[in-house]
Image (tube, rainbow, N blue to C red):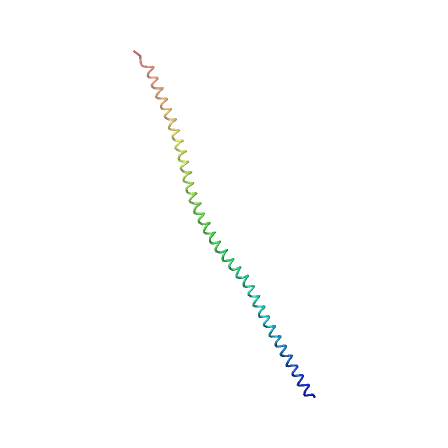
Length: 126
């Protein structure tokens, strides 16, 4: 009787150990699945963030290129505007010069007319 109780007890222990081992294996499998799913979910977020960062880098490089091109265009326009301003100033200088020459010519013309009239009045008339 004692030996049968010991055998029965050993059998129950063996069954309990098998149940515990089965549950342990199930827990390990569950934790592996959970960890895999969690890592996959996190990797999805990281992958999206990485793709967004690459897009931002690409767009920022394009923006830098556009700004550089715009700067070159602005510098060209500034050069053209400075040339135009210089030409307009030169035209203004020419206008002032021509007005001064015109005034001098009127003065010379007036002096010649005055001299001519003076000579006309001094010469005897026949």
